[in-house]
Length: 619
Image 1 (cartoon, rainbow, N blue to C red):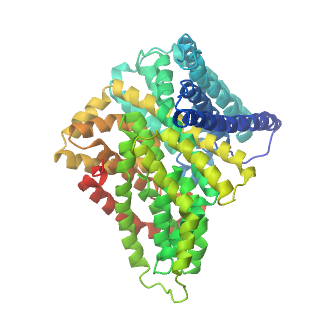
Image 2: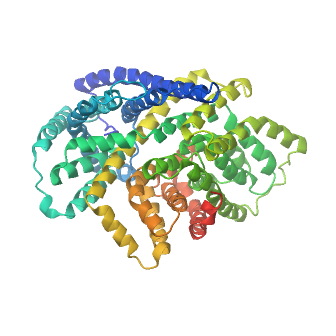
Image 3: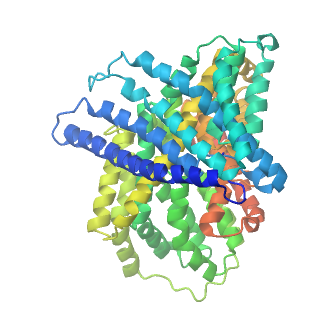
C-alpha cells in the first residue's frame, strides 16, 4: 500500500496525483500546527502549575484532543510518505511479478480494512457524543471524531496511490472489492464459530503473518486481522473494536511520544548532540578504539534525551564516522557498532518503548526510567570488551592527546547539553513532573540553549521537523491502537489464560519463563519492532511474570533489551538497515562484524536477566 510499481503514467494517475499532492500539502501544515499547538498548550499548563501555582484544569483535555487529531492526521501523512512500520525484507528480495502481487495484496488489505471500519467509527462518535469532557465542558465527540476523519482521509490517499501505482483496471477492481467488503462484512453472521481456537491461528497467525511478510504496514495487519476475527467469529459489535482502538491511542501517557520525538530532532538541529560528542572525543579520542568508546557513550547520552532511535543514530554517526574512518576503522564495523549501541540503549530513559509499557501495563514510568539506566551500562561494558579486542592493534601514533585545557573547554561547551538528560531523569524519577511535562520543559530548554548558547537554530527546518514528528507519532499511535484492539480480542478469546497456564507449566519456573521470553522477544522484535510487540504481548505476559515472582520492572528491562537485539539484528531487523542508511554504508558489509557485538549483547542480557538487582536495585 506504500510502494509504487514502475510504469507509464496514465491520465487517471495524473488526476489522482493532482488530488493527492495538494491534499497532503494542506495536511502536512495542519499536522505541523497540531504539534506546535500541543507543545504550546502543555507548556502553558506547566507554567501555570509550577510558576503561578494555579493549575489550568482544561489544558489536559485540550491537549488530549489536539493529540488525537495529531495522531490521525499524522497517520495520513505517514501513509503518503511510506513511513508506517512494516517488514520489507521479503518484498525487497522478491522478483518483479511476485513483488507486484505482494503490492496488490497489500493495497487490497489496506483499502478493505479502511472501507469497513469507517462506518463503525462514525457510529462510535455518535455513541459518545452525549458524554462531556470535564475540563472543557464540550462533547467527547471532539475526542473521537479524529478516527472516522483519519480513516476517511487514508482511504483517499490510499486510493490515489493505487491509481498512481497500478493500471486503472486493477485500481477499479481494488476499490470495488473494498466497497463490497465494507458493505458485506457487517452482513455476514458468524459462521466460523465451530472452528473454536483454530480461528486464532487462522486470523492471528495466518492473516497477520501473510500481511506482515507481504509488506503491509504492521498497524494495518494487526487491525484487519482483529476486525475480521471479530466480525466472522463473534457476535461482538464493531463499536467495541473501535472503542478499544480509541482507548489504545488515547492514553495520556502517550502525549509524551510526539514531544520526545520533536525534542530529539531539536537536539540534533541545535548542535547539542555534537557538543556532547566533542567532549567525549576529547576525553577518549587518543586511546586505541577511543572513538568507538565515544560512540557507545554518546549513544547512551543522546538516547537519554531524544527518545527516537533514528534521531539518536542520526545525531551521533555523522559527527564520528568520518574521523573514525580516517583512523582506519572499517565502514562495516562502524555500522555494526552503531546498530549494537542502538540495541544497547533501548532502556535508557526517556525510551518510547518504556513509555508504551507504562501505558499498556500500568507499571510506573518513574520506576521504569530508574530501572532502565543500569542495564544499558551492563550491555555497554560488554560492547566495550569487543571494541577493546578488535582495536587492540590500532596504530595511534599520529593521534594527539587533548590537553587538560582543551578537555575543560569542551566540557564547558557541552555542559548545557549534558545537563538536559540529568534534568529529565531527576524530574521524572523524583516525581517533580510527569514524562509529558518534562518533555515540554525539555523542548523549551533546548530551543533557548540553541538560540542563546550554541547560536545554531535553523528556522527553515522547523516545519519539516514538525511534519516528521507528526508522521512518526501517527505511525506509532496507529500501531498502539491496532495492537490494543488485538490484545483485547486475544484476551476475550481465552488465549491469554491458555498462555498463562502453558507458561506456568514450563519446568524450571521463572528462569525458564525468562529464557523463553528472551527468545520470543528477540524473534518478535526482529519482525514486528518494539512498540507493537509490547502493546500486543505486554498485557498478556506481565501479569504472568508477576505471578511467578518476577519484578515487573526487571521483566520490562529483559523484554525491552531482547526486542532491541532483534530490532537491530540482520537479516530482518529494520534498525540494522536504518543504521546502514544513516551511516551511508552497504548493509552487507556490517553483517559479519555485528555478530560479535550481538553475542556480547546477548551475554549482557543474560547477566541482566540473572541479576534482578541491576534493574531494581535503585527503586
